[in-house]
Length: 402
Ligand code: ADP
Image 1 (cartoon, rainbow, N blue to C red):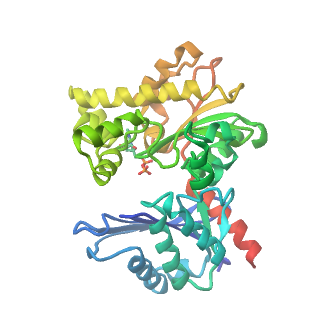
Image 2 (image 1 turned 90 degrees about the vertical axis):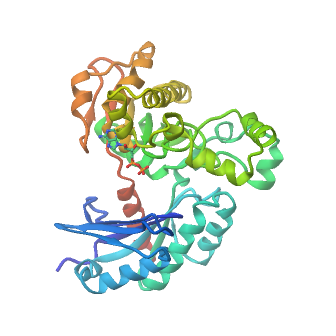
């Protein structure tokens, strides 16, 4: 029987809980599950481990706490072979504010710092805290670690993270750009450095994480120098249902001229905009590509705006890097949509970028590799491994706790 070698990763959101068991040594996944649509009658729990899969209805009253309790039950019975191998628990936490430039072993001080960040991430941090509390009760004997989406971006310089607002808002209320998707961009920096055969502290990469949420990061010497998400995940690129960059005056106009309340604005900007809002069809890139192929004008427009905005960001992010080793596409869209990659790179041809059309078509569905033409700036597709980054950080800090 092998010794404890698995990290249980918990990612608690306001309406979902994702969990997986990962071996930090090689990234192998022994268990993956997702509880979705929590708080509604459509709530379900889906999971897979080795050749087994499950898909069960949940009660609308189920929340992160009751699901974690149910997981404990499974670890005691059908998943007991996995329970024996758990060494620690890693929690994905969206906002660590300026408190955390690294992951942290959870203790009362860390919990109180996460609580302090709830004001900065009212949609995300309270759910993560609920999950952590439930998990501390459920697995009291295991070390638990918080891994922050913002931590990787704490290396940003002040000229990149400050908004051009009165400085007192930063000084007194911590209002600044923080960035998210840190574990994903970090995993791209690490894998990109390996593929380029360059030490991580020498590698310069632009990483585009394109999923339902999307952000781009300028990475210099393995460290984040700038990233497109800001105080919240709303800033930057066009996303599935988030708007990305806007004229801030537009918000005043919506409030004054069209009577939008704060709650309505929150819904509009986070849930009704982006690909969904423009296409009036779907937030899902694959569905939009299928609709575009059948002539749906809204789908084509939404995807065009997505790629145009992305190309402008890629061009802008060469500024802080001076020398660029590679542009990397990752996330569900970046890893799979050869159309989005082609359309985006078309805009960038004045900067010398050129795709190898055949490789661009081929590299999808979890594959990795270069998609640029030989002799032009390197463009890679690299599947993100944020879960592996979380597992490794958790194992590293848990070892210190022993
Ligand atoms: P999340 O941010 O929820 O983790 P993902 O990284 O899984 O999201 O990305 C989801 C997005 O990836 C969706 O828009 C989906 O349509 C897109 N996607 C997945 N597979 C494909 C594909 N084969 N072609 C185009 N888009 C795809």
